[in-house]
Length: 150
Image (tube, rainbow, N blue to C red; front, side, top):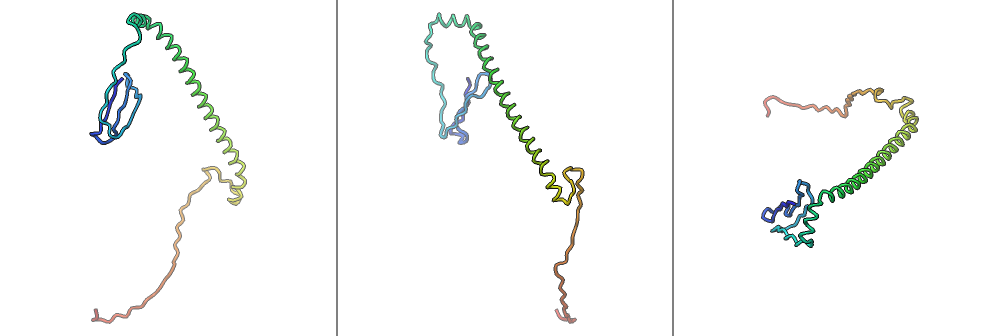
């Protein structure tokens, strides 16, 4: 494991991160007023030196067994994920189908609102810019000016 830490000296995002040997982020703990990170010493092993040696000798056999179990669990999880995604897609397709059905049912009503014109297709639309000028008020004022006056 690898630990990275930011202490209170920096005053932002104080805390620590724990990473696996291959760089996978495992934990992130944020703590205000975080001053020090220390590793706890590894406790002594409960196994005898002979048992540790036997395990090291048969490690390949054990690892194959546990890798097979891990693969079974991984396949089960990926199958569950596929099922979940399939269900989400089916829900989405149902929603789209329902929306299209409602859209079709309302097409006659939309056509009535548009004076009988079926304008659901985008190609049928024609954009027009119309400018309207409207005179709101006109007033006339006569000013009498005499020459020589300021």
